Amino acid sequence: MPVGVPKVPYLMPGDDEASWIDLYHRLYEERLLFLGQEVNSEISNQLSGLMIYLSLADKTKDLYLFINSPGGEVISGMAMFDTMQFVKAEVQTVCVGLAASMASLLLLGGEITKRLAFPNAWRQRFFFVEKKKKKRRLCLR
Image (cartoon, rainbow, N blue to C red; front, top):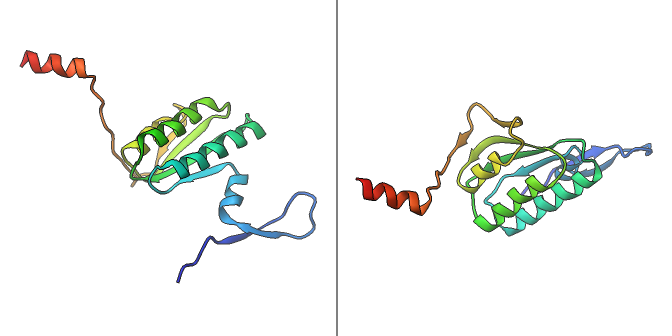
């Protein structure tokens, strides 16, 4: 039986009574973003749009991107990476489970002094080698 997205009470400024909103919208209010699936065009567009919107709303407050992803599509991941570099607000990245492939690049896309991985998080890195350097090494062997 699916549970769905939990709802939490939220008191809007100026209201007397709290209203129930879904958990993710409440976290967005605190500038907390989550990448908890494979990187694809849908999640890339959603998170990129949120980063731009939140940066326009207040460029002095940091954005927090929590990552638990096996990676995914290169084009979609690069769109998110470029958005992280474009927005005026600093993006803090936190690996909370797995950051592999494209997700590891997104982890590195955060502000250089504001990258973090939890103690039991797994990070998988790929080393990119230019074709010319690879050919040169093969010739020297």
